[in-house]
Length: 451
Picture 1 (cartoon, helix red, strand yellow):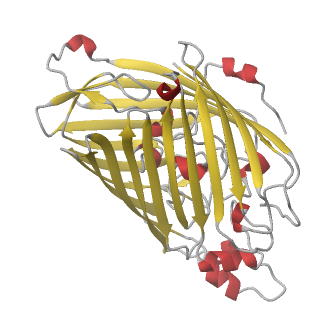
Picture 2: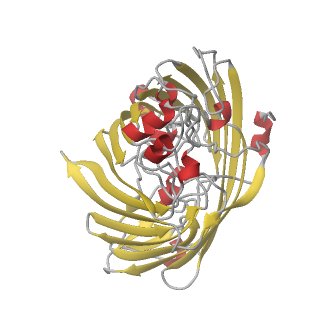
């Protein structure tokens, strides 16, 4: 497998995942003097992230094509993104993000429902590949005269935005750009790396294998309340590269309500997300019943138009004091039909803390620790126990137990230059819900640059 050296960080083409995962700050300060000199007409930003991972040998009495490999592993990944933003007519902006991504996750990003590197996808070719990540139009209509200043950032033009607004977003982007945001667990580039910490694992969000979809979204911001709804395209096959743009055949509906509040004078946010996916999914129960005693059940052989997956998620973040923040997520889906786009998690719960380096006199450093538990439905576990495979897990048999992950990281900024070095450790108990295998100890080193 092709390896990447840290020298590849010198590349100036850049790559992958949600706007929240490109550190979209969205921090505002109300200003009275609205000087036009502060309004940006266009901007250009870059990021690149390199991750090296090492997993020592772990207990593995049996394994198969979708297993986390028992032997020692070393893998690395590189992503790089260019963010071009242009202001058009009043309230309108366009954003274009060409990307490069390469490398591989441990065991090809297979064998853990909560995979350990959010910068990798299940793309078979590890060679760096250039593609268009995002290309979308955003139209904002003011619902109040009061404005706030928006800082200039990646996919975010410096200038003034209405405090209350109606916004439409159409084009190609990641659903995580708009939904399931969390202040402390949202980007594997600078925060937690595990898939089920960067997003709600039970949210089978619409995306191709690279993490993007064509979508139309509407958002209303009114006072401390935020409302979002979107319709998006799903891949033609589970975990596929090609999106099905025929909405009469397949679609994803998403809605979220969020509220910003104060608790003892400290900022907090809570968001409730619901979704429904409709596609020609296979049924776990039908796959088991239609297989003979000698056959391995195959969920893909039972695909049928009109099958659905429904679920919900809750995201919470709360400032505790100037140096400490708390976050949590809960998620659930019905787990009757096959996972289609993100990963094989039907229930998830996570909780964690963010620590500011000011506590130990390192004002630009920060750290985090989190606990994560994932589960699957009875139909899903019976299918895996009978020897079935999904698109990310399947050990040929299953001794079921919830998958548990402990993750901790430290982000170190050594100079005034925009470069961060991180150390990360993940302990995975019962990888892919199998208590016969593991635990897996995963050590990671990350370098992130953003301009």
